[in-house]
Length: 124
Image (tube, rainbow, N blue to C red; front, side, top):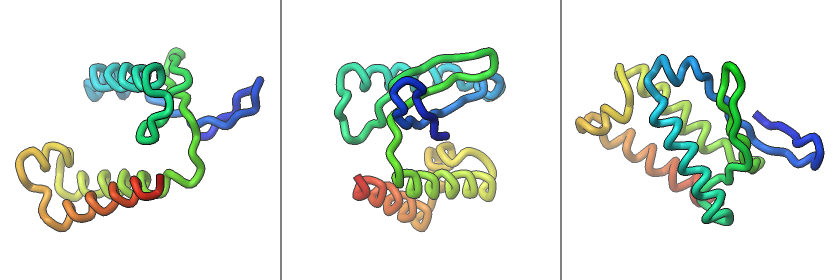
């Protein structure tokens, strides 16, 4: 979601992750690693064009929040990739990453992901 900093009026992208879902799906290590990686890049490579910069990370009673730089128009490729990822996971039954590990991804889906990732990089 888009948010506006009250003092500077700067627009940011904010990602909210439910603490309940992190615990329910055993994603605590994954989420902690994501925070550490984003903080590392924010500190040591703030101008890296391939990483969205984390400005703030905080929590409340129910969620973990990441406030990052907002890039208008950049979400279409990633959202279509995410939508396709979710669709494929539901159709094939199970997590797509697991299917990739055991060689069930197939040529058509592999080409789709390669093209979508390439398009995302070209949009930079």
